[in-house]
Length: 449
Image (tube, rainbow, N blue to C red; front, side):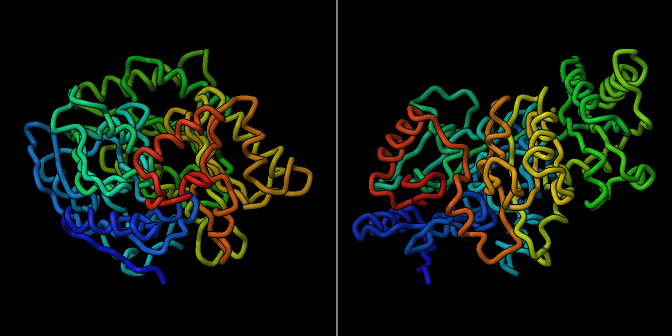
């Protein structure tokens, strides 16, 4: 059983990492542990638990800046921001619906299930608003951390335009705890929108939906959310609780376009989109059109970001291993990538489902771990990446469940997109600079890193 280290002061954190270097002992870095299912399993003698660095140390609503311990639960931060009508604009999601296999009973029933602020920044995890407001890294202003060498350092500050030194926040975001252990982070926050409306267009084909979303995103109507749920998804997935309109349109595809801001502007822009996409001869006519109000919109977009529409694929009762893939693709061809994988790799297997987000540039795919005979290989990892080659993009294995050997599967899979040789060499040099002895999360992103 791994020894757990839970420092709550900078001095203790330095001592733990220096001890790990001296004893050549690897550490698995985590906060609440809500996302330990992402990436390759870390084979470590000890667990470095950063949840002791919790609490909001400085919050200036007028300056739109917040500083908190890296182990602070996101739920606590969002509660405070809501009181001041502010938000984390990158819309951090809650994956507990598909990650329940990795959550303890305590985590599943508490605010910890959504994770910590440091965890979401470490993974650069963002929600549906990413294509409009930027990723988590774009709101990450600064941090204090201890490197894998055991040296404390800091980067950035409490201002948006900070030109002092290297912008290491961008490097830490998406490093998954392999470079340093952050104990304090500073982020930019933004005002909540006054009003939100979501335009729903039902009954369009995958190709027509892609054209509509692309055209809508190109207009000056400032769309902050653009998602597409194909009809096949609703044959075996839970319906949205946002509105009864989904019950009235069973097994129908739906385009969702979100507009936010002052009420007069929102009403004008949502009407402009509705007229453009329902009356123009350039687009196929939807079977039905609805507009969600602010409350229903909030519920619906939470469900999009939280992968609610794939959650039924990852219930504990499943006997077959199921995988969730995050595919970053060129927005205009996202539907083609999904079709190529669904039809050619999995032979239209009914256990495969997908939907697109971020204006078509992100495909969430649920599928069996192993593809059927006749695919390029029996392993879905190689099959999926081979099917994406004509269009490019990245494929990340986001989750594996439904079996006792899920960790073994992640260990034997290139979870993150394989890097070109030159980029892989650069990544190795960066790792050696921050963590020469490989004590922090070794192997979580790539073998030997």
